[in-house]
Image 1 (cartoon, one colour):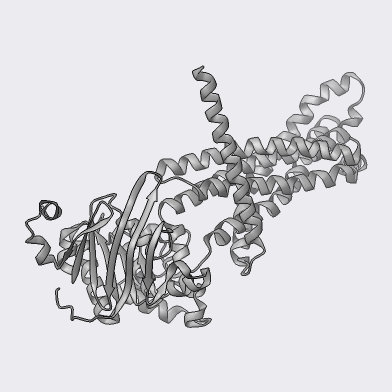
Image 2: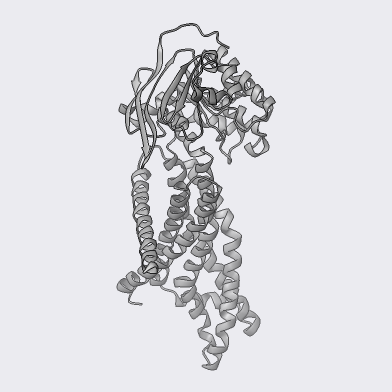
Length: 260
Length: 250
């Protein structure tokens, strides 16, 4: 019986969190259209986020492309279908692996960073100081960060995809001496708009979710340094869950329009 | 420090202020008047509602009931823009300084200047104003440093410079000497005194530091259980026979 009560409590807390997150998102959409737009801060955040995650996304993308090709090669060889490697790699990376892995990395890197930064600003009264200074802290801190993650994530995804495919090409080049031009020709031959567009749109939603949850957790951080740690940690956990839910919905919607 | 001349112009009036968080009744009908040019010290134990009161005063917290009139304006009736405009006249020194970590000292001082364009217009070169404010607190050489490079006392002084840069008529100090060593605390007190003389500001100082109260106060209010329990000059209160009042000075 006690376990059931515990589960109900957890469920209640989760639903409350969802409700508050929806309110937070509503406030974002209300504030984003209001004047003045903090363009300088938005650019600063774009630079910070892109710069902070670039190397990590690049390295991870490269290794995934490399490992993915190495692991699938023997199976394709058994069926005499190694020539299908570029098509298989490109479709799986562009459609699914690239966006979701990049988003998960950014959730860990950017989402936790935003949660910790805003949480610490909240605890040290910097957000209050901003309000007293005649600045709308929600607009200055939250809106700019959410917009920055929304616009930067698709760029990081495209970059990660490209590097992952390059990693895959390297394996093919070492094993079968396939030229760069031939490999990339085969990659692009296999791709259609139906692969690229949904993946890119999905990446915008991933970016929005990372920024939204990070800001929500940090901005509503409870007092104390423990609260900052908790904000950073729960931002990552909550975002990761949300990313998979968005991915699940995105695949269903894509299936309706493009008949996967 | 009791050189305050009797001036009857009320710059802040708080009437029957109440604020609760669930079952926790923090303010239970607090009343207060701040006269122009006065240094009013509010003392109270931790959790007695001092910081909540001061945050209600600047519009950071919304009271459940009661009225707060600042320079003739009831802040509960003000639109957000009007409240922002009023905030240029009310400086707030936060307990932990609240300097923006990601900005240099110069950017910290420029931040309110660039926001409150109605008071000063659009300032192309903020350097003279920034340097003047920093010189007032004796820290002109820190202009390009980051907050993490400053000591606790220096941070407090830079925060005071940031408060002063908007040339406010009222300054609210939230525990200005807490967490500082006695020498630095004394420096801050002297600075507060010199600022009051130079700019003729009125101040509310929230503290539980008796030395701070002795040095700076014209008048004091003791806050107990969310109401003003006792009021008077430092000398009047320290000689009180009431055990609750005595407890503050022991």
